Image (cartoon, rainbow, N blue to C red; front, side, top):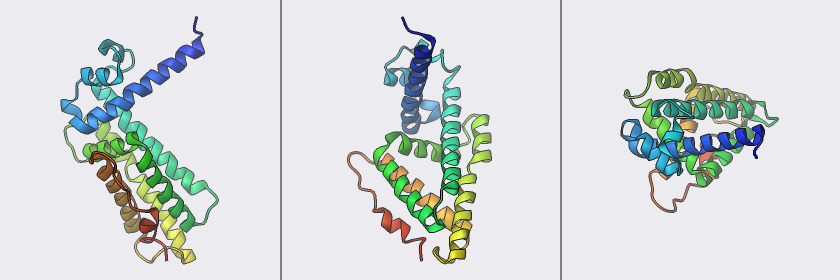
Length: 199
């Protein structure tokens, strides 16, 4: 017989499974066209079981967007904290993000989903609030790193926020490029992207 800790672990794993499959469904079909039945079938569970975890598909959608934005913001804060010089932070971030694009279907589909959500009016109000509240922080933090690198002379001279926009739109663009292609897709070498920023 399972104990409470095992039950909690199983519950958490099932919830993660639902969210992972929901990302793919929402990214491919959009919020409106995706049904709870589609998510349940993709996750290999009974439709009714989903309602033990979420009240509606809109609740699933909101949780996916919130979780993705929170994880991205946490990662950027961690990048600020690590003991590296600014240009090394930029180089490391690019290398790690491109590795994640290559290896994680969930990551690239989430990037695709956030891009869709940002450009859509047909999303839950809570999602709009989350995007408004959280989407600019990664740009602001990368701009700070760019500015610090410029003071050291290791980052090119340009408006730091514009460099941050170039950084994130390049990463998001590559993720969406891979997410919308079938089969094996080659992502450019990290050194090509790094050269855009370093002196």
